[in-house]
Image (cartoon, rainbow, N blue to C red):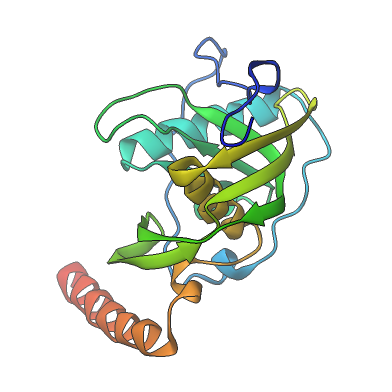
Length: 194
């Protein structure tokens, strides 16, 4: 059925019983060059991958955010986590490994922000509906559909795996204005450190 995830193909949920100390990771912000690099596909599905996914989820919740891609914490691997629960609520976190949008339809414009793009949000055009292929934390293949907000979150996070930020979908004028604003923010940060 379009716009829903077949229960048999429900993406994996991150467990809360892993035996490690959760680590909140530093979120990398633009213009750090790691955000512009293509992330490497995951080839080993082991406990370390589950630990990374759990750390990413906790980092996302602490920020707080809706989703997080591994490059945003300086890890060049194709893994994303997200939680579609309403703002301020902790729902069920989903992890996708090597996700790829294989089909998209329709157009929708809505406001986006990003944990890696400081103090900025803008309207971005995305597909209204997408079909995604990915793997679970155990390496099992997934193929599912998403629409609306779910589709938007997936597109935003998967873009990160390919070195694309939401600001890349904006006009050059809006990007230039943001870069000027960011330059001021970075100068203020530097002054405050002194």
